[in-house]
Amino acid sequence: MKATIGTDQDTVRKSKQAGVGLSIIGKVFIGSFLLMTVYPIVWLLLSSFKEPAEFITNSMNALPEGLYFGNYVEAWNTGNMGVYFRNSILVTFPALVCIILFGSMAAFAIEKLRWKLKNVVMLLFLAGIMIPVQIVLLPLFQMYFNANLLNSLFGLGLVYLVFGLPLTIFLFTSYFKSVPNELIEAAVVDGATIYQIFFKLAFPLIKNAIVTVALVQFFFVWNDLIFAMSFISDSELRTIQTGLMSFAGEYGQREWGPTFASISLAVVPILILYVFLNKLVMKGMTSGAVKG
Image 1 (tube, one colour):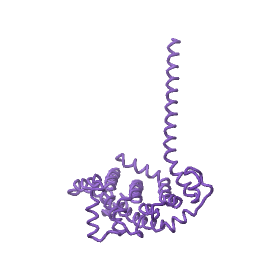
Image 2: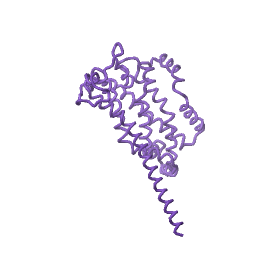
Image 3: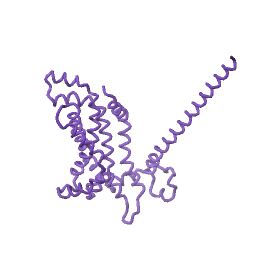
Image 4: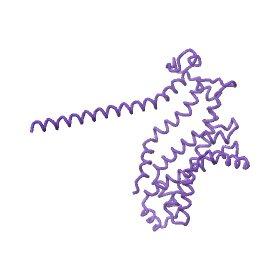
């Protein structure tokens, strides 16, 4: 009997030791992953405060000797980051508003209304998700050339709207499944019009999903390079991502201080936005997973 109890205690002790070992390995793995993720951002920010001479005399991994804000001033004024910021804002936010508005309307119509061909329309939008951008780039460029939409922020925003709608409609359709049909039927009985049901009832109920979709599309539009490079060649109409490519001299030499400052200006607002909206994004991602 004593031998059996002793064997059980050894088994429990070994199980606890194995659990502790796995926990330590997991923490080391997470810590390593966190270090690999955070280190480039910290290194970028520290490098943006170095004086030009430090890039020549010191190692690239050395800490800055002080906080030199001249890099940011030069990036904003000489490097035209102010113009690139303005252009990105003028393209991104109108495109986001249209994507959210038109995408939610289409998803509501597909999921909650009864009409012919709604399944066919949904399949057409799903097909838009699967088409690679590179395939349609050349014919789209030809169409834009014929329509005189090249070098136009409106034309660039139109591309983002069209390519953002399929994924947005697909996501919103799953979110609208969680809205009870009984609520909509009660509103209809009370005499509400279809527009009142959408704007006053259904649209507010998916606010977490709206934040999630808006953030996903914001990253896509803000960080886009391929459309901005293809349809914009005027230096005064460049967005942030294409503007960063112009930080090179006539013979390819690069001013590292203003370059790092420009990249920081492009990256930091996105990080701040994600940190503040992180909880809403998580709620939005989980709310569409279960039908209520």
